[in-house]
Length: 148
Image (cartoon, rainbow, N blue to C red; front, side, top):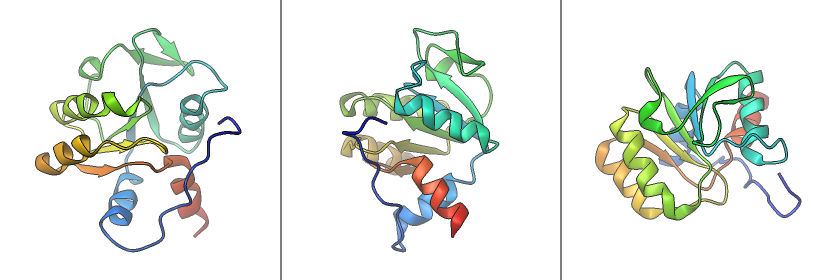
């Protein structure tokens, strides 16, 4: 992450969001939409962290065939197999479409990274019964729960 970006503190208060975070962190297969091949980008560093902690990370980026020594897919629909969680590193205006694609792919959860909020995406997920978190950093949340 660059110096101008900050992840929010981990969610500690009980409630629906904390329960969703806890459930999503139990995911085994995480598809990262907007995964970058640039090591300076947050998506790249967070993907590396998740891989190092045993998650099966799959990238979605139409500009690359492989990132972090893993096959990368052009679209969410092209990802084969079951998807536990879709972790989104896209601008907010694209998140409703990504959420629609995640629902169509049968994902159990959608997580918009820190700094990304989209109320339409949240409503789409709620209507489909898909767990949803926005404006939280999956790495910060995972690190916090490993300590606690």
